[in-house]
Length: 431
Image 1 (tube, one colour):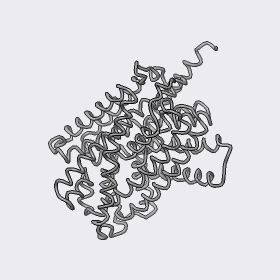
Image 2: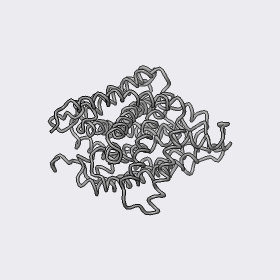
Image 3: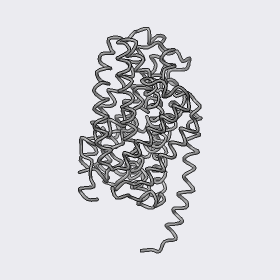
């Protein structure tokens, strides 16, 4: 990889991490958390702590393993091809299903600003598909173009989000958090369910470790971007979502496809609501841009190593893995179309749980890989890794039976590809 092809520097990479974390979740997630009331704060705290520990594990591995591909590279280095393929396949499922969720959230935000655009489920699905394929076109134009888009959209959403969170603290009503746990389930079950939902808001913490082949000085840049991006995005996200839950009645919150915009409208007027709706739309588009870029890079490394079909390693003249990019967008489109009859909130909740379940396996494997790879283990690092491992297992259980079954089916769908690739490799003459 030439220096000219290493297009992503520190600030661009930080923007990509923040942009991928702060996307749809912060603007739409409060609606999914409405049934849990104040008990959702417990899940938020657990998710933020667990995500920070995972970010530190990824940052450390990025220092000692320069391989391209994030969790896939760490898994293959520690456990070999089979586990490496499992991590790569599962993470790829996470990425394209996440893109379906973000595109749906984009449609929900756009619908608040321009209601006619999502007046029917079909129109909502078409808006989601349009955003997905516009972002796909941006990534086809090159990595640097997607990086510049990430800087612009991250700036446009991060500053207003922090301002909203700080100003909104003055309008939080204590009655919104009473009763403490309106769901009727135990606090342990609620915390587990909420942690699985809120983890969605932190997915992307590993973003910087995936496209290391196009990052300048990756062993220095990637760990810094991971920790800085996760910290900034995590605090801003938790603050804003908690404020929204405290500003709206539970019934309004649960039914709203754009709860943050609704909260702003009720407190500061229609102009403020429209402004937040516009920011949410930009935010979702920016996150979609970053995740679409990531979906092509996710399949490139295993394809270069012969674990994915070699078509995924095909690069166009701009260095973009175009086949992986297009294949991923087609799958995300299929997920949107197959579920378009659901409400936007129901579709969003289903897709984020599916995406979260798919990414928790690579998270688990990454933590286990750290135990095998890192020879310099201090008590502090050991504690961080144990915490990250426990959190990943707990959050995976919290996604629920239906989601785990869907995740298992998609995971098993990759086994024939692995077997085929092994046969292809075995048939090639030895060098």
